[in-house]
Image (tube, rainbow, N blue to C red; front, side):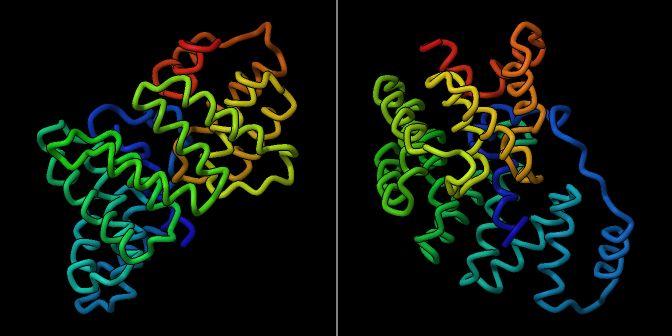
Length: 285
């Protein structure tokens, strides 16, 4: 699904619904092309729209940050076609983005829609790794009154580990870190980075995992060659749906190349917005 598969990571992890996303100033700006503007106008003015035209319009709005308009269309598509995995998945992603941009109380309807849509998507395609990863974070991060549950999170963790070994180790590290089990998290993260023997040829399912593995290589293994390779791969594969800005990865590359010249502003940004980096620096550096 390309962009459709990745848009959810604009709000990943789900704690942004109750905290803050990485500020957009760290990301490269999204430029709306003339072609996109013209296509939106052409589709929007159609009196009758086919399912395909509605889906295309919803995606165009999402790509150009028209999240409210995108949400409204995906809501209609899900109502008309509840069996469509892609619509459920994208409704969940757009809901998460909107939830992250509103005060907590106003975000609650979007949070509920997000959770429901991803749960339905998981039922439709239980083998879809990206949905299982999102649900793991939802159940881990949300308060219990909104459906948070460590038990359900552990169930998702089991599914993830059955789908992909490396992603399973990373998910395990995240879960133990989020639940304050630092020793168990460290073991899981070490298992993950030890799986990467040859950076250039290791198959990575999620691009965000390249960044995570690069941070682990940098701090836990102190293997600067591996870390540099992973950060470089992350930048090369980066798209609008990735969780971390390329500026973070470039900062790490600069630290590797010229460790005597550290940008203290970016160091503070990592401490504030990159939970894995902050966790390692505060516990294991």
